[in-house]
Image (cartoon, rainbow, N blue to C red):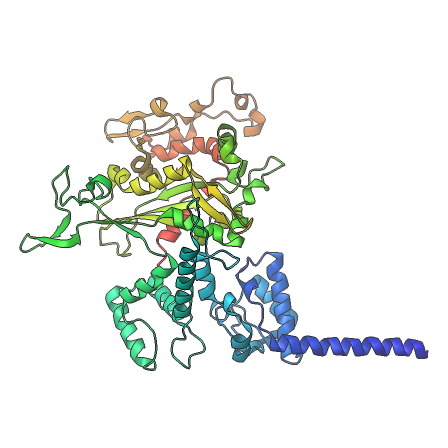
Length: 557
């Protein structure tokens, strides 16, 4: 009995010591907050929520109930520990509390944050490191094959440290919540989300600057803020365009003062005097270079690994879950095996459509954003907003119509380079340099924009781009329009479906729609669905080519 008692006593003492050590460790260390950004259905999120609630309970003295930080409770009411875990998994955490650097309602102290978080884990460092450096902390290797000299690397290293010190400067001397970069990014995010004009944003910056202590480092204008953000490589190329959409003033037209085709002036004209306003272009195309953005993607170890997903996750049971399971993907692998050999090579989709940036129905203004989607990633990632890239912003006020090719030229040139030659890129996952290539699989647009983007006919006798000259159409004299009837003729006379009447309730179709509805109802939208099955076989699941994600992204304030 004494031996048994001693063993139980030693176990109890070990448990008490372990609990005390764990309590001390969890109280002194910063909570892991990375799990809150993961998908709630993932195993890592559930484990993170469970560990968070356990650590919070220990910090607070193991109470039966703690504040629930879910999106509904918002740290207002107490819940049982198990209930808090369920709420976090089912509903998610309150976004405002989720972005808070210190989770004070759950036992975390600000002193823990400042003492325990190393510089390498701060937002500013990660952002700058992704823009300039590899995951190992050394300068990004040169894109030249010969490499850089030691002197140039030293210069880049000092430039990085200078930018890092500037980014991590406290907003003012005694500020512990915001650095210069975090304050700028939060304010600029509000500007973008609310659609605030630069004039009002300048006024807001002036007021906030005056409210803060005199030694604050907050920029006083939008231009100063944009200049600061450019150190992260978030800029774009400004390309002047002819106001009649004839040319872009680039390459051989770079130095011209007027359009060689329509003779229109390159510069804006004064409405009253009719004189040119030198230096103010009549129309501006904004191009966000894709090569540098692809380089930055592979500098992140996590993203570089995710871009290889398609190479090892193709469907094995014949079910299509991703474009990697489609006929088009297989044909690319068969026709260009050297491209398919490296799973890091990118396969892209392009989408564009007109939108009104002012969200005012009475204002006729059409801006055309051109977006790229990367299909290398998993189905749960590739169509997310953060993985859809804005490549071009074609200006209004009118749609480019058939001249959209003029505005696509900078993007097409880069895509040609990426296909023919490739670019030198550093892979942070495999820790090596390689030549990245990319190809455009298809374009995504609504049906009217299909005619603008690809030049296909979308109305008239050949309105169906699949049937072409064989499109079944009929001209209604009184309605003065083409209608598309007789879609049942798409089944050839010997088709197996015609013999399997049991599949269709043993009834013979006699064209009921055509009998009861007027012919004018049957526009091209009644004809196009017969090609959906073919499209799914060629390109994979249709939701990877829907316009909805791109429309939501374009219209997101």
